[in-house]
Image 1 (cartoon, one colour):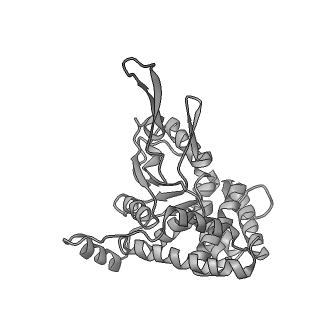
Image 2 (cartoon, one colour):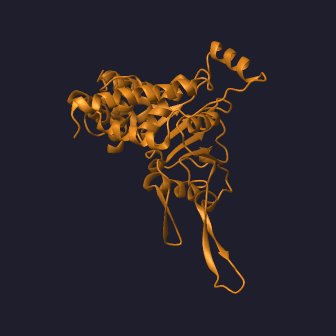
Image 3 (tube, helix red, strand yellow):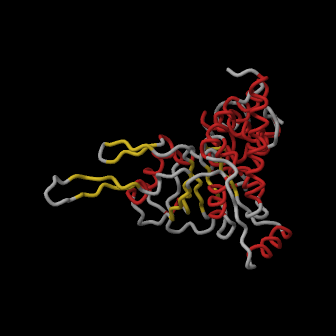
Length: 328
């Protein structure tokens, strides 16, 4: 375990680098500072994110930009109902060379990258979604009984359109739980949209350069795990997550309105996310404010309202907000 004397300068240096990455990404993606921050929190935590927003809000551009800024190999897969698991993970082909024995050769799919954009993930069939799930959770795929490791680091930023639900396959709870954060992408404000119009409809194009390399990013990810977390922050995380579970007599409102709540993976996600947020903000340890700020992105996709809540017009975001206030 590192001492304060050795870890503090490393945290300060890492904070400068990731804030520079944030600033660089913001020169291309206008009015989405919070989205950029939460995407960086996800990557610094070593996790995956689910971005939910209507078309045209720069979700695809975000992935391309982060790939460039963080020095990662980035690929994109457009999910459709006829997409097959082999279209993502790859497949074996038969090699026939005259005079030689025939053999199978594995051709890698787009999942063999460092930053994968799964565009409109809920349009693919459950069979295809489950193929991506193994890669997200285990960082390898198995084809014909042979294991193929995915490059490190590996992050999935998946998008979902909240409007068109016809012809979609809702993500199962097990897969939703694999996403560290749910990031809601909203419209930019007037000033940001004005800057975007002026910057994107002219002849000049903003050129980005890498701020980090993949190796440096992995070092920072390890550093995030070493960041000390005070006991009171651990207690706040546990109090928040446990209060969101019905049937534990932790919160009357939860028992009345929540059908099922977050599991232990939510606590782990929140623990990592508050550390990453502290690093992005230039602090040496997370605070209770970080727990409150990230409660929604961590918990929203790990909970569901019951019929009573829907009948009374309850909103999941508001319920999580009230639960977070109790630990603030």
